[in-house]
Length: 291
Image 1 (cartoon, one colour):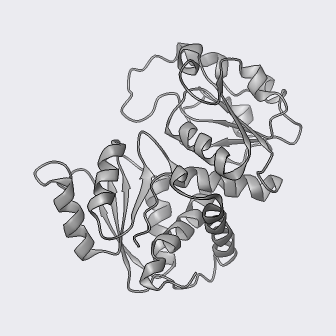
Image 2 (spheres, one colour):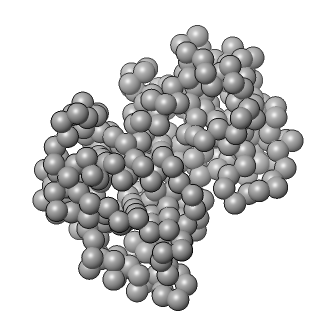
């Protein structure tokens, strides 16, 4: 059985919790990592710029003894001169897994259908499951079990928001996204009232209002959803602030909040590394990797 990692909604809660448990274990072995992936290779494919995703998967694979090959839009023929089906079948003969970050979710799923090796969704316009796994790991490090916690999102409704919605059903936490009224109208778990969303929240989360490829996007309607000290005051005294980075300084969050003691954005970024290790271990378990 091929173990892809495409959407959080594809998994039962216990599987996701086991992956996170392994991420904690691998983090504890950060300076003496087990060589789980000795002799294995990961293809890393990107159709847009990447810092944290590229570095975390690259280092994760290499720390655990494996190898990587990086291919950008200019290096591959995915969906161009060569079909997605052909690319999937060829790469399945060369490497042991594919990690891909691309805009079109349907194309990623098509790649997974034709591949005979695991395909990992490192981000599409629809979902960002690896990021949310790292976020949950970080929340639980700081606040204990996420079950029953209130997580409040502010700004636009994007791929990260949707993956939080998916995760809330698996991990049994409350999730509310405060977004402009025209966006809230047809999206689940939303409100247009920022104060209501922030009230008694355990976790305050935001993301950029303008993602890669959205240059020129109007942002005026998002200003009421900026995370600032006034908004944070409505959350619990113990509330933490999260952002998957990079930050557009200082639009979606003010500098004082981003650099406050409540901010755990760099712990969150580090945990991308450890979660990627655990996701790779799950996906590659059929190769004989010992988790």
